[in-house]
Length: 118
Image (cartoon, rainbow, N blue to C red; front, side, top):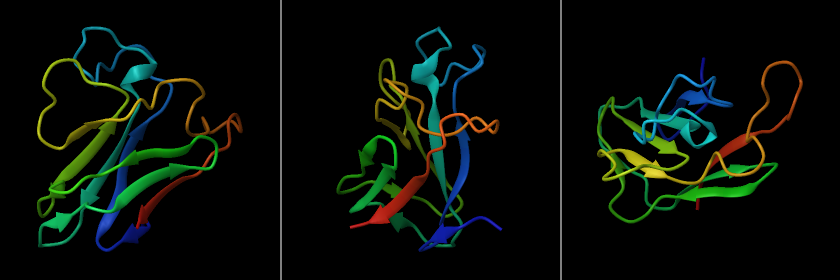
């Protein structure tokens, strides 16, 4: 079972994009397409105001702002960057800049991601 915080779960993530997934819509698949997806596993809208994503390796990755919400069963996707106007629920955070933010399963870059409610 996934870890949760107030009904939020880490539902999906992409690290070291294998050059075929263009998350940010710029026409090129690269490190800026890394993402972390949170899902609302409750039957009520969740306010993300005060929530932050942190990394052991890189520190603060992203702070959600006032008015940021996830509808019941919906998702919020924090991406490296986004070209043009990001769809609702997408937040650009520079994840692909510099070092990787998670391990690759082979023991390389062991990192931990935290969702914190400040």
